[in-house]
Image 1 (cartoon, one colour):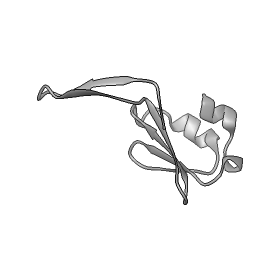
Image 2: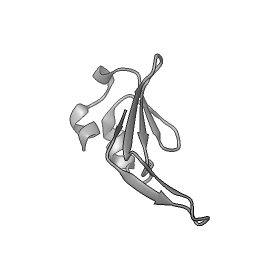
Image 3: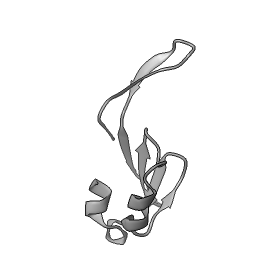
Image 4: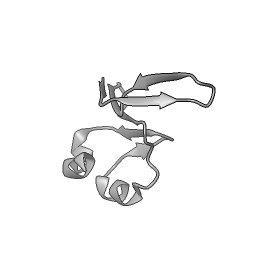
Length: 73
C-alpha cells in the first residue's frame, strides 16, 4: 500500500511515478518504504523505539514497540 505521489526522472530519460511512503504488513515485520530514505532522521529514529533499518526501509515488529507520535512526525 502506498501513500503520496513521487515523480522521478533518471538521467537516461526514464521516468515514472512511485509512492512517497509504502507499507507492507509482512509476517516478520511491518515494513515502511521511504522514498526519501532515512538519512537526516537520526534523532527521530533514536526516539522511535525498537526498530531496524535498511537503506530506505524501516522495520517494526509490532506497533507497541514504537512511539506512534514520533513515527507520525
